[in-house]
Image 1: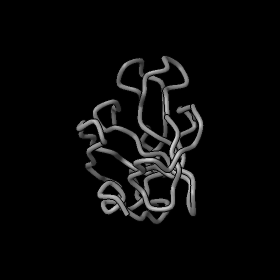
Image 2: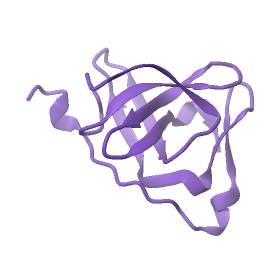
Image 3: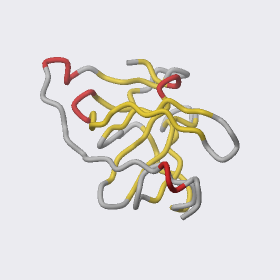
Amino acid sequence: MDSQNQNQTSIIVEETTDDDSEKSVFCKKCGHEITKATFVVEPHDHTFRNPAGYSFHVLCYSDAPGAANVGLPTTEASWFKDHAWTFAICNQCTTHLGWWYRGPTTFAGLIATRLVR
């Protein structure tokens, strides 16, 4: 196992039921609705560094209807064990918002600084 795969994280998809659950999450660039707080999964917050050395604070949601799934799935440098990723972009302005993950669970890992919560 290479050093990139040693830092993989497992994730369990669970939807929230808090009173704040109807709050929406928007694209910071264009204001398009991306997801809702009801889709938060735990653990929710993660900070990762990609192979190029860039760090990302990622928030996980079980669904993000406002984010398109773009690209071919790959497990290369995946931050989540047994999950392949593709890019998640805003359906309205095409800003890169994060990544879709598919494996034992399906979820979106969205970059916190590119969202308004």
